[in-house]
Length: 303
Image 1 (cartoon, rainbow, N blue to C red):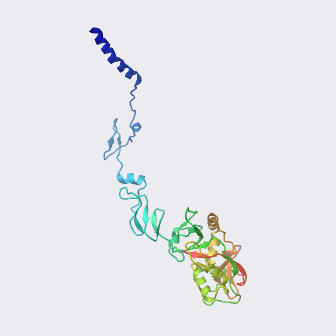
Image 2: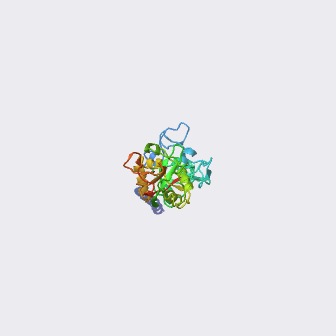
């Protein structure tokens, strides 16, 4: 009987010894190794198992913001949020018709062919796309149509076509258009930005045989635009290009366009001459080109 008891005791003790030999119990030295943040929490938190440190609870708004849920998606131009919400906010918003999601906001979309104020969101040298948006670089899925060359103080812009569309005369020598202002100095002409107003007056004064340059610009079209929306640039637009050549030339290069070097303006000097570009001169304007000479036509569009 004694032998049986001893054998039973041995059978019990042996496994316990094996466990002791193969298992090491190591104390966790601090809260950080358990994933706790040691900090003071005046309003309560999760207590660390050792010491007096606490891990503060984070508010819902802080958690949501951390993961990009920061837009309320309400107000003019908004049509709700994209995807699920966190704390009543979204990672991005749906925009109403006529608005685009730009830099975290639903902003009014450009109306190509007229001033819409959208140019205030762009910069000189930006690429204008067929959907009426602009960007410093090309955007996958969007078609570049022009480069932003002028932005007025009230956000009206003009962008120049990416290519030369014609080489032709401005018009017949000794033909002065009564409705079109005459600018006898480069300084005065450089303040004329009315590209489409000028072009409209030239178009109304005669057909494409009489005023081929203005008509070549007027009949130009691209994806997202139609004939009648493009214009012969005014002398002030050429001056803007002259004054901002670096940024604008970079834009043409990024969009794969032909950089503007010379071309007709829609600004008239008198019955025999019209302003065109010549970047060696001040203001980038040349006053010595006969209307009957051939010149380049690079149209612009308002937006």
